[in-house]
Image (spheres, rainbow, N blue to C red):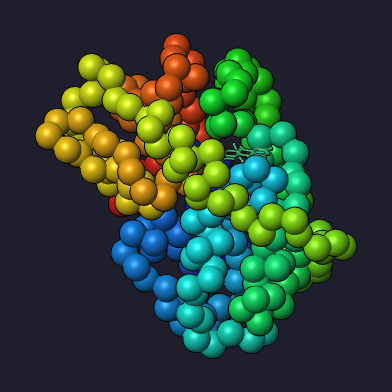
Length: 256
Ligand SMILES: Cc1cc2nc3c(=O)[nH]c(=O)nc-3n(C[C@H](O)[C@H](O)[C@H](O)COP(=O)(O)O)c2cc1C
């Protein structure tokens, strides 16, 4: 069984390719969190995988919360791995996943890194389409290499040191100042997609426009996937291109 968390499709794409290659079932952590589903029977599964984006060099808050609550029946004998998609480089998220799993008495066979287009546009701009495609081609090669190691049940990257931050806290840059910065412009057509997509259920359509409150993980699904590009983060995203992995079919509803 492979669990994935994905706001803009990079991790979903990697998870889908790996699941197809190793013959594994796929579960969306975003949907599971919203549905409150944490118990899974993995008795017949040869693999237990977590395909996640890197957040601030560590685990996304929602993924850490999901692992904390996970109840697995039939655990034992699975090859357990992590795959981290990232925009530039990976930090200590492999070690953070190892730590989160060790807290649940789950042994870990290591992780794999896949550099993909960076969706964190609060501080920077997306690269050109050409550079995005070149990066996606390189990512395909990294995914192929990871699949080979996973199928051979050899170890991935095993953390050699401890973790300073086990996950990106959901009240760091987000809740304190950040959710206040999210807003919908007049382009908003009140379609409600952002409310349905939010893995932390912090968007509510009040009156006509969405309002943000609560534990936002800053995954940016709402901002990137708004069909009208009506969602902004302060003035930091004004005029910037949005990103959705072009090789992945992101369904609009309930397939976060
Ligand atoms: C809140 C946040 C923090 C991020 N931090 C990092 C980081 O520390 N290093 C990095 O290389 N990429 C970082 N990124 C970029 C994402 O890890 C990368 O674009 C990832 O592939 C997105 O996956 P997704 O499309 O499945 O959501 C960050 C993105 C977000 C939204």
